[in-house]
Length: 296
Image (tube, rainbow, N blue to C red):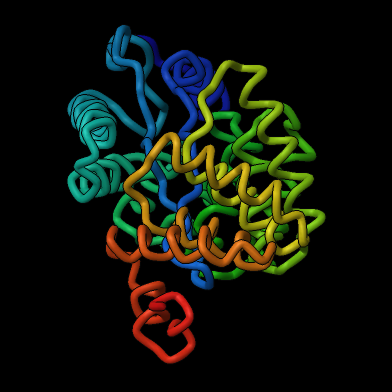
């Protein structure tokens, strides 16, 4: 077992090791209603375990012998539980590791991931910020993106924008960063900026041969609708429907665009389909006097 001369050298070696193990989290958008938008994290952190034999690598100066073994085990268990989406257990194990050795920024970062999974976004932000101040895993751009995402979940769009701008300024080739910032602009009703970011995200996703999901297309459809580009809105809602024909919101959005184009019969058909799929806003609309025209 190696013992490094100081914490700086230890953290440097540990950072290099985790760079080979870490695969950044991806984010995708999902809207549940026309007026209330929120993000759905689809996939959580995937961590490689092919060479996760940490204890054979290094022992930080502040951790020795038995404590190092306990630290090593706690961190491994935290990573395994994080990978398996056992978020509460992951938080507990990373906290154990931090209590033994507070000089490892990676433990704060991964605990932030687990707190996100639990919906504890204020705690996640604290962990990510702590990780940033310690110059740990080296993912400054991704960490700022993660902070931005948690601020989005807290509907603090101004702070979200600060961190997403920072992420993009550091690393501009990630579609997720533009996707998330586009969502912020969408909530701020800055439609032109939102569209620009979504289109940029689309190019970067396709360049990496990543699939675009139905909610991504529906977001673009919603933006086009608000820009008055009704045919483009319909086109994107159709793409969303093709991927997932069981999401009522997509038919509602398409129906709105058709109605504004004066195609009331087609709009009504889409509203009814949306209602059949249980989309509550359309159900309420069709059951009100405003929706009487669609009952004829």
